[in-house]
Image 1 (cartoon, one colour):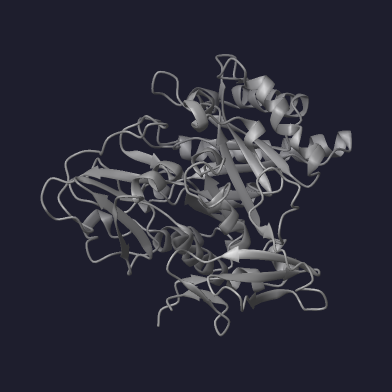
Image 2 (cartoon, rainbow, N blue to C red):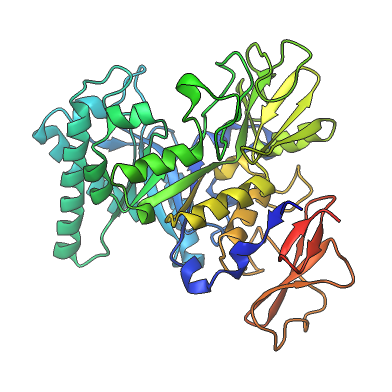
Length: 453
């Protein structure tokens, strides 16, 4: 019997879990979504992630970091106030984007003097606004019109940034600023964009963007973030999967402990063009845009929850990911089951953790999925073995069980709930937490997992 929803992460030794990073991105454009889709830093649970990356700032014509939105600097304050509640939370500012379709990095990295101006600006800006580090979102050096030698210039920038951060920390006796980057997942782009050894050596962690492998730009349906290759994948799509991407980064010299597996909180949509509806079905463009994200081709997880109410759900066993159809609309997405599979793969390959794109596309307010606030990221956190979050936070993942004495005197771990097989207890330092299996599944103590009855 196949294991459907493992809880193996909860049983990891807690000091191992504490070495993982759970890095969550937020976007400054999510504030413009309507009604309950609107997201600001005030919606963030300060205990949910180990790091939060604020996207996105840019680089101006003077090679200095500059805000994009009118209220970015006010939002920086709201984000960094969260560290008063959780002092271990780290925040980073992501810099990137495009100006008239061109990356602002291209001009800045062109010579030592412009890179130096950017680095001075970065240190000053990060310290002024109380960030703990810088995230580089250049998509991608040596790609999409940028000069081929930008691959080498990117390495120079990383070296100079890491040296400057180290020197600034030494001179000021402050904690050294963190340096991370969002990097490509496709092998062809990796080869064009990065000197992997140089990239890996200079970064504190590397966010591999293991999503957008397939989408409505293709003529047949494909999953947004598959764990493995499918029988449909051939030719240039042979390596369009997480396993291929991460193992390639490692084969080129990137240490596993610096690589973070990318997990999306959104799905990619298609408009089916025939009666076929499985993986590889003919398609013609995107399904209708979501009511909140309002962009053709993808839906936030909370929009997918609404769609699933009347949809037919399917599972792609060889890729360990779900999809759903209704009428001519098709969406490949992630759920708790696929997150569990990815965490098991992440653990087996000894990666440094996971990063999530984005906080604002999970059901952050708990309005849509009838599964509490942040259902995907909360499940991810638990699966990675982190302890339960304080119940006083805005968006708890778990509910204190009324039988508060159940875990008194018991070792940390998972236990069946004899009164309700669809739930199970997690004991942590004597406290009792109640978790629910996915609909249709029950808890089996023999495997410490949720499975079919």
